[in-house]
Length: 106
Image (tube, rainbow, N blue to C red; front, side, top):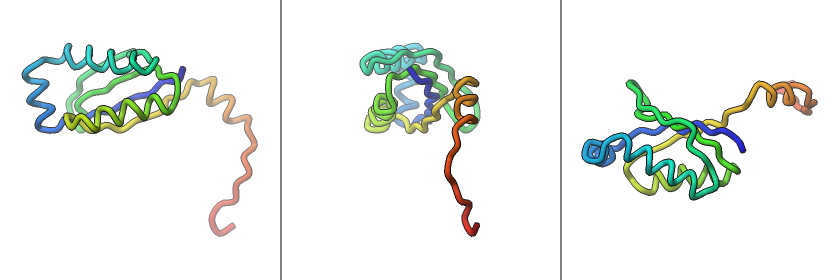
């Protein structure tokens, strides 16, 4: 499975729901969401600054990761952006590939 980092920002309605239910219920809901798609919640953290929540999941496919983002966005309580995370070994494999590329204007 691949690792995905979901960055979530609550809407005002989402923040009201968080204030009502608390943080652990949100974590439990995301855990259930990930499991329903064959994935696993690795970590869930709240933060200060431009991102409200950092959610790290193992997901079985890019489609499953997209389904997480779609479900959260459609719920209206938060917006997400998704980062695909790569291991150092995956970067080692990538550096050994030989892509055919011509820079613009070359």
